[in-house]
Length: 386
Image (cartoon, rainbow, N blue to C red; front, top):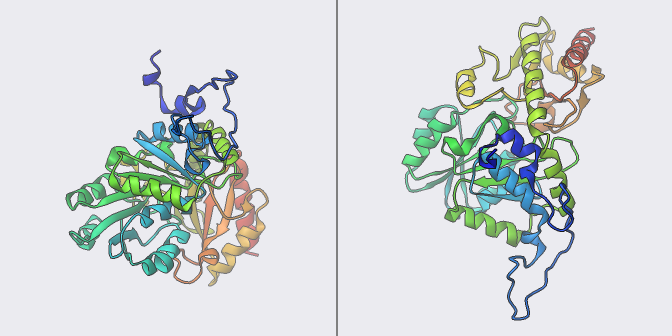
C-alpha cells in the first residue's frame, strides 16, 4: 500500500512510521544535547545549531501534527499559552485584532491585560455571527482574527469556512484554536484558516502529564516566519522529554477522541431533559444553537467537552458546587482532554466577567465506561438537592 494514501488514524498510531536510523528502534530516542558540533570550515551542514529551536526531539511530534492538520509546518511550544501568545507577539503596535467574547479565559485575560499594553487594539465580538464579523473588520487595520471553536466553556460554534471567507476578502489572517475539536474531528486549514493552534496539554497528549502547545501553518507566510523567530528568540520551547511524551500520546489520539466524543454524546442526551438539570450545552445535541454548523465542519463526532447547568431552589451556584463536591469518579480539577473525566465549577475559576453562568459545571469526558460516569453524576445531582 502506498504510504501517501494512509488514513490520519494510521499516521497518528504509527507516528508516521519513523524508525531510528542508529538502532532501528520503532520509538525515537530522547535527545538532550543543547548544542551541536560545527563542521571544520565553521559551517552547520547538519542544520542544527542550538537546542532552543533545533532539537531533534521536536522533529517527529511536529511532523505528525503537520500531517494530521494537512499543513506546511508546525512548531512546538512550552504551553498552549506560549503558542497562542506568540501569534499576537508577531503583530505590530496599533494592529487591530478580533477575538471571540467566549474563549479560553486565560488567553482572554492575557489579551486584555498584556497585549493591549503592547499597543495591540483588541476587540471582542460574537465570532459566531458572520454579520458581526463583517461589521467589526476595519479594512487596512484589522490584521488578525482569532477563532476558538467549540469555544470554552459554552461550546459556541463558529463557522470556520464562512468566517475565513469574510476575513480573506479583507486581507485578514485567521488563526483557529482547535484544541477541543482536534484534527480527529476538524481540520481548520482545509476550511481556509492560515494557522491552527492546539493546547497540546489537552487531547493531543491526552494523559495529563505534559504541558505543551503547537501551531501549524498552511503556508510559509511572513506571519509564520515572525512567529518562528519569536519562538527561537523568546525561548518558549518544549523540553525534549515532553516532546517525546507528546509523540507517545498522539499515537492513541484517534481512539481516545472517538471514545470521549461518543461518551459525551451519550451523557449529553441522557441529561438533556433531566429534571435536576436546567440546560446541557453540547454541539452534538440537535437543539444546540450551533449544531448545524458543527455537523458541517466536524466529522465523526462533536468532541468530549460539554457543560451542564444545575437546577437549584433559588441558588443554582450552590447546587452546582454541591454536585461537583458529590461525585466519586469525576475528578474535581482544571484542564481537559485527558483519559480521566474532570468536572469543574467554571465561574469560580474565571471570576468576574466570566461568560459562564453561576450554575454551570464544565465536564471533560474521558474514556471510562459511560454508564459509570452517568451513574456518578446522577447520584451527585440527587445528593446536592438534599
